Image (tube, rainbow, N blue to C red; front, side, top):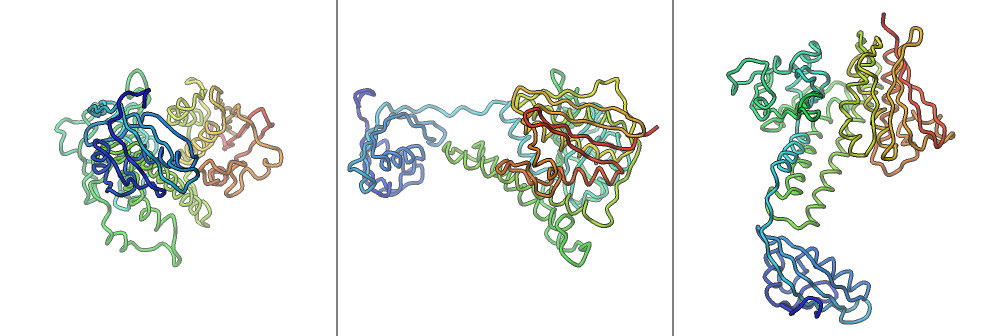
Length: 456
């Protein structure tokens, strides 16, 4: 270990990657990481290096990091197989050992983590206008049915009119910073709720509206879930299983995020990555549950929409606002209809928003970074149309006829999607006496058109 100075500790492993001999300070770190002597190497970064050296039969040397209580340990290690092939173990030499306090997360990091956890466990999410009026919302909790009904019947009203805020003596309107983190009482629910308000827009937070998250202090009691009457003789995924599955999965996601961020205590980077994978898998599962629930709804014989007069241009602008962060993360530019444009149409606001969110979300996902997605609206005769046009690779000619089929993922097998979004979107469009169509030339992007009855 001439390149890294004096050897501080030596150790040996066997063919099963068990540490059978070790000097201090490596032996102590191994035990504090949960290992035994003899026992499998407990320092994740060291174990990975030992396995690679043994399997490849190569001498490896590099710096590793490990968490040791509230500290971070960095050490230079050199690992050499003791025999050719995988039959033998390895010898380990350790030098350049240093310990430093683990930095506390910044205020911004802690805030982002809190929002991520609240977003995962929230039982009502809503998009609010800059004046905190409700634009769209989603909930499946049975004790929030009254709140959902009030919001649906009073679109655009501030969300604070539908709940009680016992901790705040001031009368609305209230600044969003006063509302963020406060407790609220929801008529019809016996559970306590905490409010999270996420401001959207820069440089003035809230200039593009807010994301509202309502988090319960406890899951809905199992007795209440079990006592709810089934809507039909056979099990209904959307109406019966969705709320039952959503709560435990959301808790799994929240716990995984807590572990990933090390809020529960020190954790090796490898295990933090595992927790991140668990959280991502949970989010994917929730999206599949939502898609299957929507699928059941739109395929029901009694499914109807509630058409009303809407401004298609305004809905398109709102959809762009909601997906703006996702687009920026991918380096995609979204071009929304100008503020002065208005295209009156007949349709159900939240269903039209759902369709446009799906179309724009797909365009962002399929388009390479640095490209632009255009959202255009226009009236043509008695029809109002919204067009989502991307600059992606386009859709092969042999796939155009099946784009709106169930479980069709446009040839992408590993993107994590369910392949139901476009199928559901066309069902919704046709339920509103409209249609959803696509045009595409390979290499020149895709053009999806939502067609609705125009309103005078």
